[in-house]
Image (cartoon, rainbow, N blue to C red; front, side, top):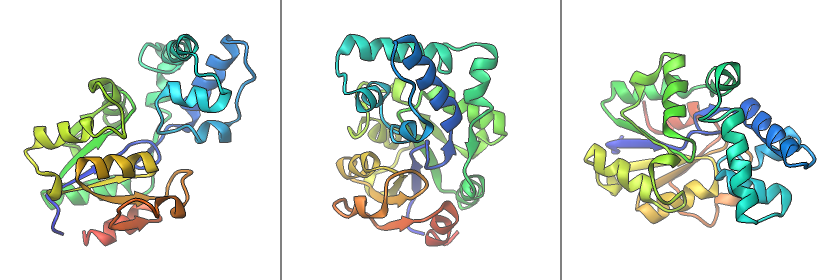
Length: 224
């Protein structure tokens, strides 16, 4: 394998927080007097910023309502949640099949690993710590740690800088066209992982070196 680093999105690339995210949407919409979305409707928003997910499901782009939904979500299952509510996000998130094995293989091959996600950085770190897998990551860059969200490449470039790597040395892996556009803007090779809701054909217009049906297939592609 020629890459010195393999970076990942989190939701539907390495992990699945659907239950917690759906609960946050249900509670937020209920508090706003809106019809609660279904799990499948919420799944279509995963990987977006919360404000964009809110607008996708409601058609409402009012910044004040977007901000209020973000606040309600953060208080219900997000970074401001406490006790059992917070556990739903941290302990209820599962790593996808093959994720731990792939990360362990990369570590064994001395390849740097990073997560660049819209999800808050501390949330991702706590999820991996709960799983006993935090040692498999060299770096996490969350959406709360950058000024511009994906597909702006700020987070990707920050990860490159902190790990001392050049864009051409890194493969970025993600499940959405947002991730594909991020890799393109940041100058990294891209691999699509079809664990989420984005179909294979959606990646046709974006540069990519591979499309993996699952993480074990990505591991084989990387010859690990």
